Each structure stands twice: as C-alpha cells, then as structure tokens.
Length: 79
Image (cartoon, rainbow, N blue to C red; front, side, top):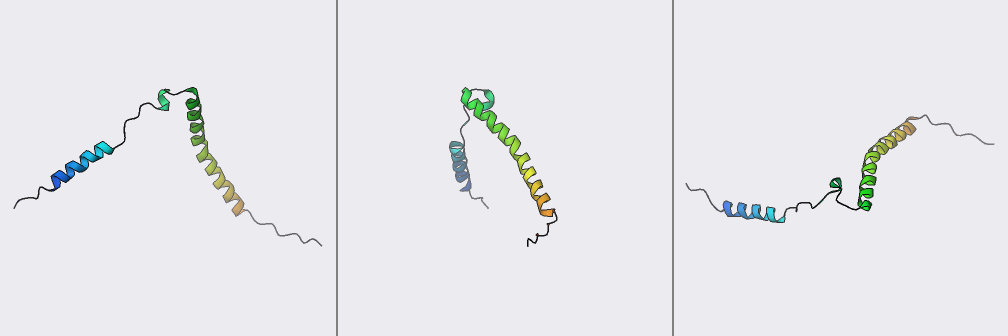
C-alpha cells in the first residue's frame, strides 16, 4: 500500500511561507545603546514603570483587602 505524497508539497509550501512571512531580525535594540538620548530616556522610564507597576498592584490589593475586612462603624445619630 502506497502512502499519499500530497502532504509533502503542502508541508513544504507552508514551511516556506512561514519562513518568508516570519518576523524580520531587529536592527538594533535599546540595550545596545544604538538610539538617541531621547530613546534612552524613554527606555529608562519604561524600565522603571515596569518595575514599579507590579508593586503598586500588590499594594492596591493589600489596601483593598484591609479596607474590606475592617469592621464598619455604626452611623451616628445626629439629632
């Protein structure tokens, strides 16, 4: 019994298209310091933001938890 050989051309074509349409290599990155001073400043600010954001999220969750578990004060009766 002979195996169908139709899959080989389809696999070759799809593999070739994947290589042609795949991402191109990067020319330079911020780590290489190939950019201008402005892009280095933006890179630094983005790094600080990505470092601080998870800590801020954890702090916000902690504040929310503490506020939700705090006993409620009874309303004062004015009058």
